[in-house]
Amino acid sequence: MIPAPAAEMLPGASPRSRWAHSVTTLLQLVVTVGLLAWLFHDASRREKMWEALGDADWRWMAAAIVAAGVCEFFGILRWRLFLRMLKIHVPFREVVSLFFIGAFFNQFLPGTTGGDVVRVVYLMKDHPTHKTAGFLSVAIDRLLAVLALVLLGLAFAWLRSAWFAQSFAVGNLMKWFAITLFMMLAVLAASFVLTRRRLVLGLPKKFPFRRQIIKLATLWQLCIENRREALLGAFYTLPMLFAYFLAFGFVARAFTNVVSLWDMMSLMPLITAISSLPISLNGIGVREALFEELLAELCGLPRGQGLLISISGMFVYLLWGLVGVFFYVGRMRGRRGDSGVKVVERAGADSRESQ
Image 1 (cartoon, rainbow, N blue to C red):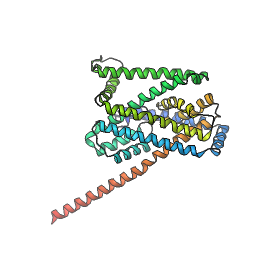
Image 2 (tube, rainbow, N blue to C red):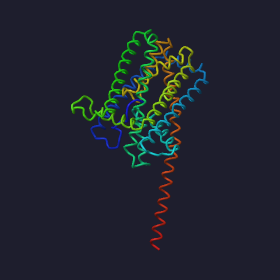
Image 3 (cartoon, rainbow, N blue to C red):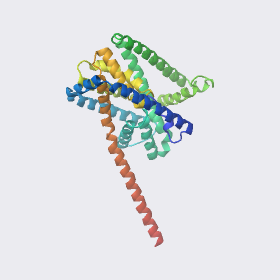
Image 4 (cartoon, helix red, strand yellow):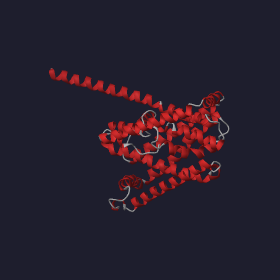
């Protein structure tokens, strides 16, 4: 959810970047398999998972599915808003279709941005005159999501500092997490000020991260020029993230009363941020390990149940991702139908010419 679209996944990527991407994916695969093997090798952990499944309250799982749907709904509204901001006028049904197609592919493509690339590629096929704007719509989407996640992470780190400090390891982790978030916020704020005062292009050529700052300034400039849409998009981001966090909170309640919704809401910014890093494939393994260790340390949850909560939470979002299958199949059928019509029309034209 966090990183910007991966350039190496685009059709025009250089052979060198493709090679680097392949090596990175291989390393992520090794990490993913290693973490999953470590998490599942313990028989007692697997036994706790089965016990929790048997005692589950499936009403909470239904609530989790609804919360995930709310998250996806606000995601659709945000992307539609940013498309309009960039003068790409797409019917709402098409926005929904492309969004869920991207959500589906995001479940299976390596990295956290594969689905974004897929939906933008399909968008470009339908609207070839808006190629750059299509990618910018996703980049602005990501930028505001990062900003909201940083602010929420800092807020929970401050509000629940005493709770996190119950565990020496978790308390130190949260301190480093808060420092990192504060630095990110400072960078975002500095880049915004530089953009607002039109000082970005005046930075020395050897200035650290100059190229990245210029790219970030492009997004800020779009937000400045379209303040209303940018503010509304930021407003939509908050309920989207809260719904995302609540979905996992409801999943946790389905399996245990030990973990409160407030506890899950407090942990989710940390878990979301770390699992979005390119450590494993789509955060698989890293996310499960974080749930397992953090819930055990802070809530005393038996090991195995944290793993189950993580897997079940991602399964809820997989269900919504599968909605994209119907849109994808419908799109492919429509393409074949259009091709058939063109063939018939061409054959008819040839026949008339021969007469």
